[in-house]
Amino acid sequence: MNQAFVDASWHEVPTEEGLSGIGGWGLILIVPGALPARVQGQLRAPDNNAAEVRAVLEAVRAAPPGQPLTVHTDNEAVIASVGRGRGPEFLSEAAREVREEAEVRGVDLRVRYAPRTRRHMQAAHLLANDARRGLGTPGLTETRSDVLIEQRAAGDEARVSLRRPGERVTAHVPLDFASEVPPSAQALLAAVGLALPGEVLVVRRASKVAQALWQRPERALRPGAQALLQGARRAADESGVQVEFLGVG
Image (cartoon, rainbow, N blue to C red; front, side):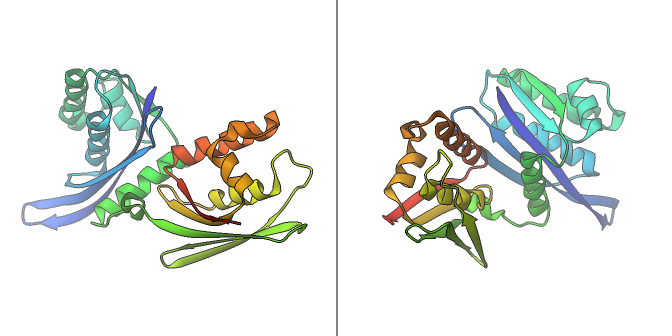
């Protein structure tokens, strides 16, 4: 099932004709088998609800034609107008445009509620805010960050340093030698856990074992390790995080 998480941001701006506003919309589109797409845009809008409906429209336009699509939003007025066709009158025309676009593209559209606290909803919110302010979100321009993994032989912890533009993050990772996941792979998973959505991690000094298990989790000898590694890979894919390796530790 294709899914989109959408949000909008709006700011009132006085004009000669009266009050209007600048809005921004953002969406995370998730299609099975592909990395999540992150899309944003700015628009003139009379209020926040209009910007929210526009986000749904752009999700329909971005989704693959002829396939079902579930759009997640935290706006109840949008759910009523687009999803049920009985929302506020002032949204009826915009909602009708969304439904007509879905029909033309052969998209079986469903609109569902999702709280702002969900990870993809938070990402859509950031996209919308940046778009309203006329800023590009760094993740859309593929932020590349250097990751250095330092692990002493027989040491009980690894030091993970992540350097991105304007920020450096360091974590001391306790290693569990009783775990089914090798210690070097534990350190790599900790590094991936520090990534932001859409970030490209350039990992230096990862061990051959950690690199091999990340690229092909099925190589892990034990089922528990396979499951953990595969889950970490899925989570990274869903948030658009990519891992590249330079050198071997």
